[in-house]
Image (cartoon, rainbow, N blue to C red; front, top):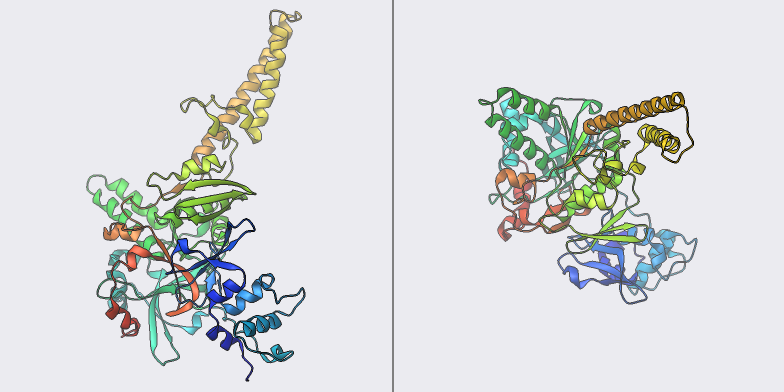
Length: 537
């Protein structure tokens, strides 16, 4: 029998069979459309957080919340301890050979793994692999090809012009000889804006308004790369507001909604209208192109430390978790999050677990972070912890002074020490002191109090003007900002996981909006994917 190679293994072995061999069981609670596999503990109960979800094409799996996909080969190589064939120090190619041949009931000769050849690894993203069409201001012919992409999304020409430097049509020749094209939003690292490290891609919409393909360019660095757009070209270290979204379409929709609101007041309040529009143009709009990573969060925070960060993620369970994870990353907290059950976010703090229902309409991010001692300030402040202890919101002195920090705490401690000392010598039963000494102590005490009050007032002023995190999802009746722009009411908040890169399924994980693209079933449109996806000049 001819020796089998990696391509044979990937073609002939089902990823679900491999997961079962590794000790996982089908989790029937999650349904069968996108099967998930969980590990059972010795007590017969599920091991929380240890779950793999099979991707849409059935060839790969991933472990949420991470985006990394595993095929048959990479799963074995990165999880060798899950297989009985493994012994410490074993060559992973040898292990792949043993496991796969065993699953295929294929007898193997000694050391046949030497002839396997290596698994094909995806090459890094290279923008030179694409031909591109740019949207040029003042050149209407260059703008016409973009119409079918933006029309179905309700994004008007003025908004396209505002972001014209931040998208293009990328074309690539496939193995079948046809040239495929997608509206592409370039991904860049916040600290290296001059280099494109990937593409967030969208195909043209069908006649029913359905987008056939949404994904990323092959080899895209989705861990570090972001779509970063500043309409006025403001440098990142100068922007005052950063707006976070899960897609570039949502970012452009938010911009258009807010600008239209400002223009509606142009006649009655022209100065305020102009101020709002100028602020929008000088702001930074960011798309994570799906599930955000800690590296994306921190990379942008490091470059925009003086900016407010507006969390405009989708109004669904995943979007709420993304907002919470942003705050965890900001504060370098030890919390880990998961969604083992529908609607429930589990927050694990080194073994201690906190449960919150993030599917509730009245979900409050602020309430959640208060319980976990996180905060909405981008930078720590002397009063950050203290202000949480106020017994009366209108009385800034009604908090627990033990929660003061920094210079304010030091100033208060000195005042408190002098106050105790003065009280001990000026009371009814104290040892008498001359009036001159008491006057001197009162003077020192008054100065200490004034120093404390000055430090407190300065810290409070800094607190009020300090950059903050602002939770800003779309209106309650919608799932995301593009739906709000289109006035498309929310039907479900289900998150459906799909995989696609450059129109080829099975290579990359991204988030697909269940209600947005699956509201209708149309087999005819599915059969016309190639025709609709193909770019015609």
